Length: 398
Image 1 (spheres, one colour):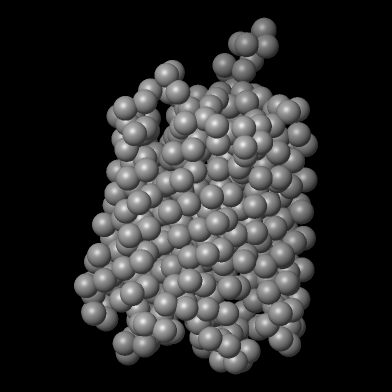
Image 2 (spheres, rainbow, N blue to C red; image 1 turned 90 degrees about the horizontal axis):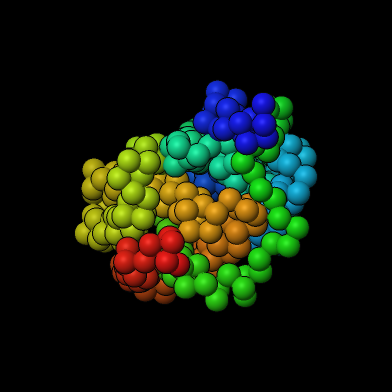
């Protein structure tokens, strides 16, 4: 059997689907922790005696750092494979959460949580998504949807579980439990993670400056920046918004879980549809859905049923964004050094996650929630509009 025949026989194989499930386990573990932060928000804010903006910085610093580090962990995995990277993630998240559980001031917490969880997310997300891309050809978008479905499932499970555990114990004990569970899942995923037959590592990854000279990448980068300025705001503040309007802490945390659950539908459903009717149209549609969703929140006036609808609609668009991004990059730029290119693209999300939630916290403290939600809606609309030129540019012409 020739090398080409061997690669063809392994592409879209059962072995590849096992790797996709390992990627889903990895993303479930790291994002189940990171995106549950809203459930910890009030407890940590009260104990550390700080305002909304400072507490939101826990989440913003963590997610921002994870996307910046993804620039390097993606390239690291391109060179050495995903297994060592996942082992590093397990060590980082366990040490980071255990140290955060013992932190006695907010500055120590910023360091332990931000670095520990941020590095784990960087190792458990971009490298695994890129790894799955190397195992598939015909069913790549579907497989990538499965891989990132773990993010939605982790969000769906993590936030309500955290709320229950915090009510039953404390936020510190909850982080100890999360450390054990998340590290165990990452170790499990590492046992089957390996490069696919179509993986094409490169010794000279393209820099951000080089990629930004490419018209397609510039549009994708600008869109992701504006969209993520808005996207991460509800992950931090939606539960707090609901609690301020008389919703119980558990039901408020469920709203973030709804975003995660709905995003699973977006990740799996849109990933499957993309293989049939085209990636770019569905990708743009996902951004339009996210932009429109913020107006549901804006008009909710504390009505829980409408907040559930908002969370579900946002999650559907968010799921499409996350599931289709790797497939869009692979379609436009090829598989060579995919992990590095994805890591570079996700530095846009680092900007959005670093600036969005703290800015929203300041707006909430100074002017109230309406101003913050309007600002998020405007940013999200700008992110959607930035993608429309790509509908007229074919991958071959780009």
